[in-house]
Image 1: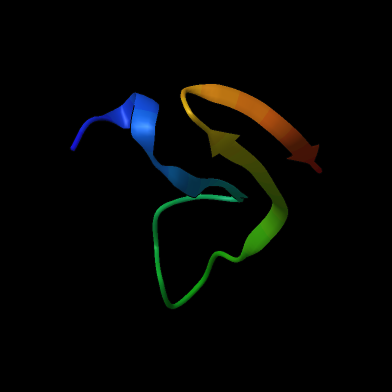
Image 2: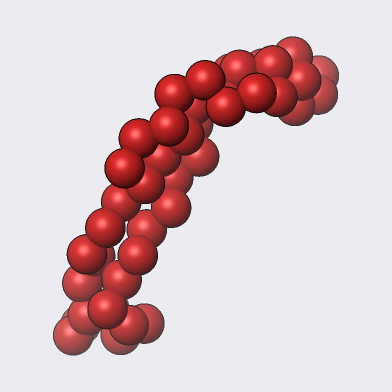
Length: 43
């Protein structure tokens, strides 16, 4: 089972910092990957 024979989604979070009590998420990105190829980018 390798990357090329699977489907999955990768998420990227952009935050205002690293303090969980003070900072927050300002942007979320995601890409759907099928058989090692990005098939659906989202932002």
